[in-house]
Image (tube, rainbow, N blue to C red; front, side, top):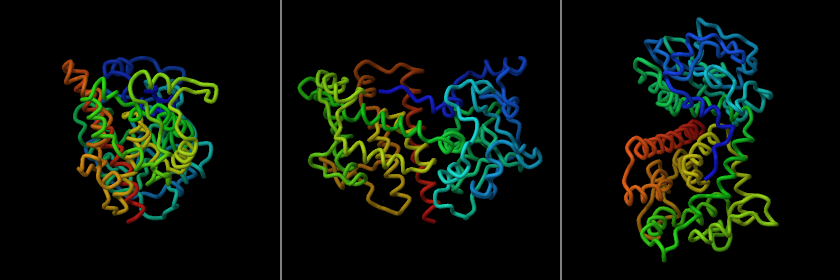
Length: 386
């Protein structure tokens, strides 16, 4: 597994500190690196300050280019600042946080690649349009996505709990961070290919039960994905696979031909995967990155997002290359992704028991993140075929 990228700061912002810490910080003096736009915003612990949540039509990002560099102060009568700070504790202290939009043309093209003039939507709090942590308009390309984000805000009771708003998290990450500079997320997604969890298999002679479960979830994933999405022959250009701990250590260590550790996948596979990742818009890349981080797997994350996009286009082929070896159709949805990503951990839980407050929260968080990523990718894709 790999450490999460510094570029995930916008995601990390939502979960970094406790409510108690932030309640104390309200009474403290402003820190020197607190920006004016984030001076009155905190991550969690703020009381719900609104009564009504709604959805309203708005213009696509390309029509708001004059407002993307932060030079234009928002109108407090028509907009409301996000209570979520762009950094930690209302600061810009989180490493890798993008605070400006250097190229508004590229920014808008990554959010609206087709330059569609159709109606986009935003979330309103007491009739005022909500903004992102960086103060940008929260413009969403899909009405179902806007309704889902609005429901997250409406579900907040006494105190705001951003950790309970995964779609708001992903949407703000796409607008504030990924669209402004997608390079870091693209690089990190590719890093998960080198050490993909689904490429490390248990030795059937040492642990046939775990190997059988891996086969049930992963068989056909590599070859079908390589053929379906990357256009590679399935016979000899699939990813490298290590079986057993000894082989995993031998294949993944650094060598003279490779400066980085990781499995020796065919160069053409790596190149085509990189082209596909670089071709994604900000919304889909954000969803892919979130799924890959949670699964520690490029293939599981890509399989989930690719299927979500296909479903949005009306493709009824929801199986992995037709039928798997066990002759059961497998739908690559959020439930499948959770099971495929947690095979080893669930196996260990069965063997050694579940730690309350640990394993159960990990299981819940994985389900939330996978389903949120799939929903984001599918609703955005649906907005382009509607």
